[in-house]
Length: 455
Image (cartoon, rainbow, N blue to C red; front, side, top):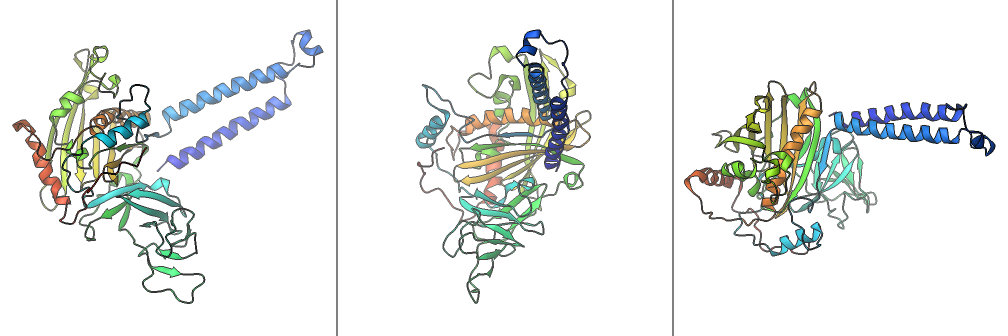
């Protein structure tokens, strides 16, 4: 992934420009001649020139920084839980509006809250060798660390000794994580305690829970099954990412206040596309204004088909999308786009783009439950390395706008277990039957709703 490389390149360029510029300003006076006599008598000769030069250099540096971020740096849009999807009126803050919605809305008769499957924990570039990260996933606190050999591991965060959080102050020792409280060391491979500094012998039962995990497509993922069963399928590798043909171009992150099944169900809800996503992206994300006549000259047209895959890939489904755009009623074929969105299990979707002019790439759409009714949704884009970064960044930004319209629906809706459907909605019921395979008899359910976890 080229994010760290780009950051280092920018720092080196900044140093290479600023150091010589500062030296020149200190040694030479570019406007040493022609100062008004008053400046020379007061001893200010050269000072205004240096100040002006510094001001110009600062403006040029800011402009260069802005242009670099626009054209070369990956797009990073990380939203807080209250940032999107809530209407703050009567002088209330968005955080207060979000908390009121969470407390007051009806949740409905919900399916189990944590389906069995693979879930993204974090992106690979966020975990350097020797790093330890604290992450909340599936209602659990976990410690994610990268061993000195480069392999990533995920273990329960709390030390079984006296409960210290291994991710807060813990350090990596070889392929183990060391507790910051008493120095107990736990092996990442199986969670076994291999060293207690003050004990003669390590008890056989001393271990921390180790989560099945994998690292693929530039992401660290964990496997969850309510009965502790081993992984039922592998996360498909995107060969173009592994070979370096597609490079990292950005990521968005949102928190959705809804049941996890609401989000992938959108793939089968074909009718909502024509109503919610037809207005052009220039009309924004606030559903109170997206149908404004000011922006109705830009329209998106969608043709969508959703279908489950047969054995041996019954855990997968596909949404085939054909997108067209009209501006002032005129169709622009250059912006026609075909997307194959392949869902793998409950939490992963691969949206692959293939355009004759705009190039090829993939957006990885990952839904990870943080707690029963709070989902972390990330969209990470990898694109052809020979395509200007501005192209995939625009695609990701446009996708983000469309997605945030859905967020406003999800954050305020009630889950209906027996919806009132017409025959044109038949794909929704098919999707619910397909999605039910990820629940088991012992899948955890929401017994009551927490109302104290304010944003």
